[in-house]
Length: 293
Image (cartoon, rainbow, N blue to C red; front, side, top):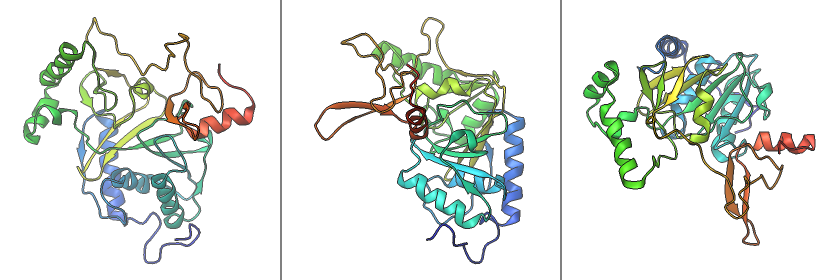
């Protein structure tokens, strides 16, 4: 599909107006009750469930003709998921512009990463979520989970974290780290790395989370407390990119950043390489001819 060719037979934003209103009502409720999972009627879309249908519907319900949209997948602007969703927005939303620069975007849809650049109050970040309920690993019954959330009863989740400590001497969760919002509800922050979890705390922007298959929407409004579940004697820590041989933090092989989240891979010569996960941030640092080292 040519991005400039509009989809025939559909209005602006693909979804019908009734669907958009229903989604906006769910979003308003989610913002008013931070962390609470709000059910909604998930619509059929021309992509498979599991490829971001929840976040796509939320974005289509919020998007306007003057919007500047950025789509990322695992930090990259050019992955298959990000490229196809970007084409879908451009073909169903006439007038909408796309950008790779985080600072220019008014609406950002992301899969499994939060941009390195701090977001502003006039920006909205929509995250794709495969499993919205952190209690699902300890309680299979949804009705019981709803009661536990309402009572802020997360004892089983604490036990799960304690078992992790007893077995491995640390909490080994690398993503989907359970996070308490505004002192009550505990959310699954989507499969973002632990590196990104602190960005939720008292952020200036609005974070929206949507699961199409599970039909749930929840939010972390601006300036809201977001605290990862931790024991008093076991502080929360993010991924460590320190080189044990030198004792110094590894730098991006491309732009030299020593503060960003790094992806690890092997180059054509078989050498171990670290590079910024956020490709837009890496490009900008490289264009400026400097790093944050």
